[in-house]
Image (cartoon, rainbow, N blue to C red; front, side, top):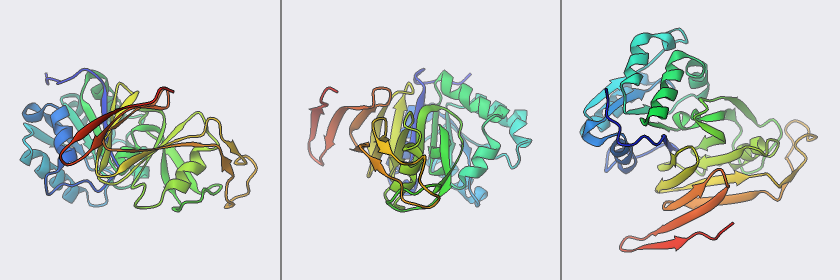
Length: 285
């Protein structure tokens, strides 16, 4: 049986375009959490239109960083997501990493299948579940599978599909700043204020422990959108019209920030300086 460095369920969710050829700092940290040189990594390139190239790229980087074993799991149909060989590979993994590509493809092939169930089991027992771009969005209950880009939220600007539900009560979006996805995330969260919106920049990760607390790593920021107390006309706005949203709470969290998803508040910040780390206690809610 694989040895797990922790029994705390951990998600490693990257906003896309992470470094794979240089220091690969985010992937290096993912591998460390998954057991370092003892790690058995499963790469799922299924979302990509270039699956063989993506599988080879992640196999190379995780091998270069010192993983004991890297296995590719790539179902092409929903029937293949029932294949016991693929399920067994995930059951033996200490880390599972899902690539970028099409969110809809992942939504069709993973949730509600034995392979999706195996990813849940892996998460529950302490394997690290990671993903980038589409592989990031799939971890939440619901994901934005397509939608318009831009700053202004508009009625019916986004399509939502089912995710794996590893991160409850949250909708994750990615390439957030680089592709101006503020509006589409707002258009989803404003009419569903019980959900939190999380937008992750490229080369940036939220590392979630116990389904509740996350730490930000990488070169960008994580954007958290809370509409619990916002006023909106989302129920009445016509298709394509700008949506009124007033009173939403926004958190922009760079590397070093920690955040409690259950309490919806900042819990700490370690400011990142080249020569100095300054610890700043978070204000009480």
